[in-house]
Image (cartoon, rainbow, N blue to C red; front, side):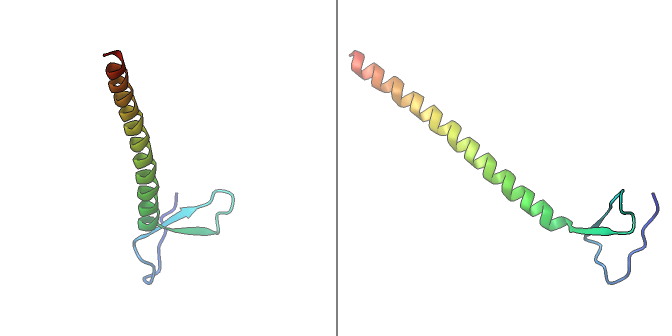
Length: 72
């Protein structure tokens, strides 16, 4: 792959992707923004998953306590 020489006004935070089918066009992706968006989405999915697992655990605990109380 060829080395790309970027103009001085282009920030080093830009990630350049070369499309294989159109080698003359470049897509600039702001890497920090993409990472931040990915972290937010991952955090939300993780939070919802943990919340559902905790609710399932608490339901089981309360169910056992109710069964123990009704058996007495």
